[in-house]
Structures are given as C-alpha cells and as structure tokens.
Length: 350
Ligand code: NAD
Image (cartoon, rainbow, N blue to C red; front, side, top):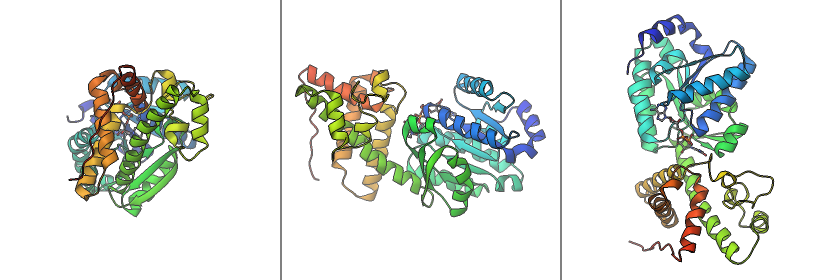
C-alpha cells in the first residue's frame, strides 16, 4: 500500500523533523511495553521528540496513543496507518513482529520501497532495528536489501520476556556492522539493560535461537518435575524453593514457574491463567527455527526436536493453550496424567 496523500503532504512538511522522530511497528505483548519505555525516556530527554506507532490492528495503536498522552500530556505522538507512513515519518524505525512472514511483508513491501523513494541523504541517515525472533536467513536477506537501499539495519532480538520489556531490563542480542550497532545502542539502552554485539548481520538471531532452544526444553522438564513433585505430595512452593537454590535452578523454575502459588510474592503467568507471557505458538515457532538451523548446520538436536513435537501436540490437542504462556505445557502434562496417558517421543540415530 502506498502512503496516503494526507500523510505524504504532512510528512513532506515534517521531513526536517525525521531525525527527532522514532517509529515503532508492532505493538503486541512485547512491542507495547518496549515502545512505552523508549518513548517515555526519549520524551523525558527531549520534549520535542516525535513518536509514531503502527500496528496491523489500528485499535492497538489508538489505545497506545491514548494511554501515552494521558501520562505525558503534550507529547507528540501519532499513528501511521502503514509501515510506509511510519518510514516516511522517522529516521529510526523499530519493528517487533511475530515472525519471518510479517518481517518479509513489512520490510519488502513497506519499509524498503519507502527508503528507496527517499532523497539519498535521508536514506543514508536511516536506521532500522528489528527485534523480532525470526529465521536467520530471512533476516540477513532483509538487512542486505535495506543496505542496498542506502540505510543501516541491525537484528536485535530480545531476551527477558514481557516482564523484562515492562521493566526496561531486556537483553538485546545484536547482529550487524559496528557502525549500525553504535547507532542502535542509544535506542536499545532505553529499553534494555544488556546490549550485546554478537557479530555481523544474523548473529543476534543465532544467539537468540540457541537461548530459546534451551528455554523451550527447560520449561517442559520443569513442568514434568513440578507435576511429579505434586504426585509425591510436595508443596509446590517448597519444591520451587529447593530447586531454586539447587543445581536444577533456571528461569523456568524461579521466575516462570508453571504452578500457581509456587513463587510467593511473584506473579508468573500461571497466576493469571497463563495470560500475558510468551505464547506457546511463539515457542513452537522458535523451536522450529532451532531445528531448521541445526539441520542446516548439521548438529544433532534430540531434545530440541522432542520439545518441538511436544509444543506442537499441546497446540493440536488443546488449542486454547496456543495463545497462553508456554509454561501452560504444565497444564497439558497434568491433563495427560489425569487421563492416565503418557507422551512418547521416539529417539533414534539416523
Ligand atoms: P504479539 O503477537 O503479541 O505481537 C505482535 C504484534 O505485531 C501484534 O500487535 C500484531 O498486530 C502486530 N503485527 C502483525 N503483523 C503486522 C504487520 N504486518 N504490520 C504491523 N503490525 C503487525 O507477539 P509478542 O509476544 O509481542 O512477540 C513479538 C516477537 O518477540 C516475536 O518474534 C517473539 O518470538 C519475540 N519475543 C517474545 C517474547 C514474549 O515473552 N512475548 C519474549 C522474547 C521475544
């Protein structure tokens, strides 16, 4: 879709404002919190900053703007109907989308053609930051196309979940040139605490996918152990505390424990019927990214493949869990146990 006439004429008037303007595309569970932190800190630093939000669901952008202006009256924030409008308005564009198909569409059909249509000096000053977790090859190709259009780009996927996004404590795993990394740093430091340059384009995603491979497997085994503990008559808070201070400790035990009342004083998604965390469907996507990468790299992934199958079964057999936090795999295991069923994942070397 091309930018509307209204937006184009406004944007032309505002070309001079592009350096002070930041656009954020994709205001979902993560993007909403990240944009809020970024914009509120930029606004505190300079009251003439301008912000632009864009989401496929227009009501999401509207409610974001309403909340933001309520908290920061006088802040300059507007809604872009399309990624093209968001790109015309700002020198820096940040994207936080579900996965590869959405990144391909938003960049190849929106952002990149718009950069190509900009005067050369505007294109050269442009920075794109993509924080989506997606396929490494897709990300590298998009970044190459952005570079060919004259702009710079980093892949900057995140670790830390919705809680970290809200608190501004995310870890950003960045892939790109040294110069693009330096340009992106001030923006990322408003949304996170650890900003790690992992290497060239795609390196941030490679690191992120390895991390989520570990996380996806861990969350299942924590569900298994908590369920077994329950059968053995252990109080979940006692078991979580024991493992949390022992060698089995990990984020899935001590922050994202899947059993209600296991973490007194904390509020993991299981306390809200598994709402508001990292969707099971997104974890299944990440396990798929890991298994694809491992088959390209020729490394064995027996546990990763088993975990991918289990998340797939969760969604097939209990579709209601697809949008819930992936720790709800515990609910799936619990239901199987109540039904007297088992999960069998065959392991063979080929
Ligand atoms: P989400 O589904 O809640 O949000 C995605 C947003 O993108 C939605 O608001 C959707 O409307 C919007 N969108 C989709 N297509 C679009 C398009 N073409 N144009 C504009 N907007 C579009 O997902 P999320 O949980 O925020 O996750 C986003 C990314 O971050 C994913 O890649 C995920 O794997 C990764 N991630 C998520 C978490 C987490 O805890 N949720 C943690 C780390 C990384």
